[in-house]
Image 1 (cartoon, rainbow, N blue to C red):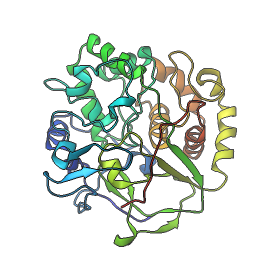
Image 2 (image 1 turned 120 degrees about the vertical axis):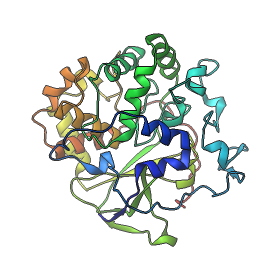
Image 3 (image 1 turned 90 degrees about the vertical axis):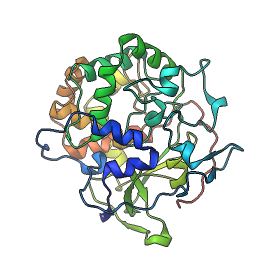
Length: 348
């Protein structure tokens, strides 16, 4: 699949120079790249690649609006250097957003910068809404103790997260965990089996469909790839928490993934509909790119905490293709919880 990539640090400039500075202060990536790394899920940077144009205006004083709300923000506000703008604060549950989550602190950016105000995240990071606080806090401890890394040492935002975890206290972990546990995960993911998928490029740290006006269109999809894109590029860069996403997968992927889930007995811990049980995290309806990375991290031993020890034997004998299929299958499962209302326009 032909892609026009961009340096990850350059892409982050779209969202604020402070995020780039945090990356520069992150632990330097070290170690080999494991065989079979699914690059479609990890989106590694390509040095020297030209940056694509942003869907956002170039002028920081330009006002940005999106469908579904009368709120407006300037492009400068959307950089989120001090606070992440929330298009739909009425959707939040559990009272005021904690200061740590909303503003961050010295050495720690606000959680909502990457994970969004509802915790739903985007393909390049974790969807943490409705996670059990027990699970959430264990992951922070694993980051802090060097037990959770990325299988791809080039994945800069994982290194940034490790630095943030080390700068936070267990009490701060708890505050963030309890806030995000109260936020329902929005069901906004559509998985489509298709022989073709949009041409994509790296933009804002994630794959986005190239607009038709810039040479975009459909092209054959690879047999072992998922192409996950926002349904509106501008809304993705503006951190719209009601935005819908589409993941394109090769024909037959979902049935194969269902068979793999049965073979691996995923339902034993994650529930019959993979909605999670107690502290075991839900997988249903979540980003297949994110799920794939976690499965591959477990397989390679990059995640070695208590949950990693439980998962590693489960994935040890599964191929990368099987992991891709089960990640896509999990993403296709819809929760009984009604999704937030959405308004989708074409990618631009």
